[in-house]
Image: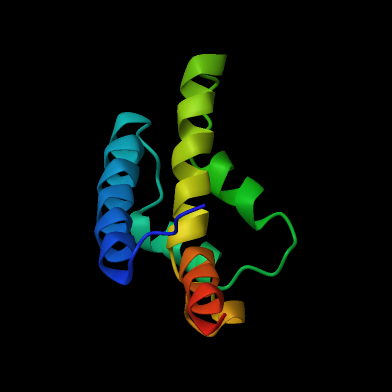
Length: 100
């Protein structure tokens, strides 16, 4: 598996942020992008991902939920986590690969 470069990670992070903002607007969520970033950064392993998905829950159909899950999963993998010393999981994998 070829991992993205640091530049590609930052670019993808910006794309994900834009997608999340569009989704927040579309679902008329009371939450903002910073709420999502805060949950991911401060995740504690206890329902953090579920908390983010709940921000978009408007009782939509399976197809829309699948799109939400995909975007939230990307955010989880590309946004920084405190437990990873401020890196995202993708950056942590890149760091590991570069040490090999």
